[in-house]
Length: 288
Ligand SMILES: C[S@@+](CC[C@H](N)C(=O)[O-])C[C@H]1O[C@@H](n2cnc3c(N)ncnc32)[C@H](O)[C@@H]1O
Image (cartoon, rainbow, N blue to C red; front, top):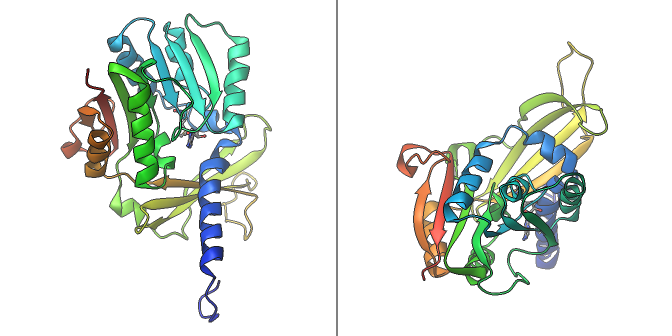
């Protein structure tokens, strides 16, 4: 509805469009799995972190990755000899993982599994380590969904097992940026189609739901030397919805699910949360 039209959407219509937006916000970004791997190929610190953590938990352990995607982290864990269940709700991401597994040999094993991290069809006390890397938990849009997931993680862990994850630290200044201005304008060549494209993004934050609605635009690149001007209709628009999780909320989720928070730091190097505002990197333990 445009402003001043005098009509209000019916509550049912408003609900539908909101849930459509959240569905797109979980799905869109993960349809082009080759592009996903390309966009995050320089993200390596988290891989090191989860490998080191698994090594501390033990040799050849049972790991469950929630929101495992293309296996960016599951595959290195399996190379280290661990047995990994790689669970994800998005089949194109898991298909890319299956394709990778068909090409390589790993010392351990990876079992891709299509599933929902809010309701796992996995047995109790089957894993030594459950991980949810790289903002996967930010796709759970209410505290009830988050708590369901934390409880599931606790249920499938063996007593003494570890639940580890990382999510963004809410950046209140960034969240309030002008939703119309395009940021991060970057030329690139699509890794599969070889099209010359321009990436740009903006976002709108809904403080009532704590959800940040990010729009990622993929437009045709202008000839080199010519400045990019966003076209009126984007070539491809990807919606990415991220619920912001505040530190005290996170501590409450951990405790309410029956876990103990071992550490909560601002990055993978262990900087204290008070000194930096990058991420929230958590390591929790299920009591024995
Ligand atoms: C940012 S990606 C992270 C992928 C991978 N962990 C990595 O580090 O590259 C988030 C993943 O969570 C998955 N996801 C979102 N909601 C989910 C849910 N309810 N259950 C399972 N997976 C989900 C998405 O499909 C996506 O692959």
